[in-house]
Amino acid sequence: MNRAELVIVGAGPAGITAAIYAARQQIPLVLLTQDVGGQAVWSSSVENYTGYQMITGAELTARFSEHLAAFSIDIRTEVTVVRVSGHAGLFTTETTHGIWESPAVIIASGRTPRTLDVPGEKEFRNRGLAYCATCDAPLFAGKDVAVIGGGNAGFDAVLQLTRIARRITVLERSPSLTADPVMVRKALASGIVSTSTDTEVLEIIGDRFVTGVRIRRGSAIETVPAEGVFVEIGSLPNSSLAPDVEKNPAGEILVDCACRTSIDGMYAAGDVTSVNAKQIIVACAEGAKAAIAAAKFLHRR
Image (cartoon, rainbow, N blue to C red):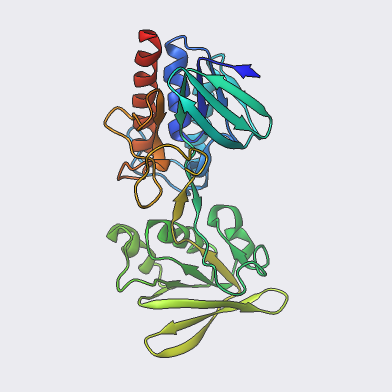
């Protein structure tokens, strides 16, 4: 059995910031995570993080990691947290690499990309179908591709692909695009992007590799030719590891203004929570708030 005063689950922007703030309070802590950086590392360009007019997600994550390394923090990577349970003063965090006990815990486990759940999706994953344009866009140089999702995630992928692909078709199920207008304008200005709203994806088709997307638009069923498909339809909170804490209908952990959950001594921060804006800068702020609240809780004990 391992023990720490504070266990932090996840090392995205929220978890990293929480760890830094807790370390500054001299709290013995452990940071449990699969990797350092979370989804922020996959953003092609971050233009709304104070202090940087433009910085890539990878560069910003590197800055975060450098700051984290300035403290003597016990960081356990390649660790999957299975379950967090217990009560104030005695929480148990079960992982694939052992069990931790702690008086307080901060859950900053982030989110996981949502899947389509249509025929062909599993079969063509990594054979033309991808969930990360930052990772895989270079594989589709000079090709026709489809991006499924008309929100900010979808258009972040589109903007990356405008520098690489020959033609890009955006498929959105809603009646209108939901991405920030500035992103949409920039994408359309490239001259190689077309959009299709009120469009339902029925199937990913191909032979050995993807050749297209079968869609329903109105009453018509059509095929959009594509040699690559990027699924960018949002994400789900990684909150199932805390089954006893109160959540909203979307599965997000409910928190108050101090990042307190329904369980005393348990805090949550970042995209796994009910906080409205899923932004890197917001996740950092929430991580700081969670660490400050956890420190006050531990000092009272």
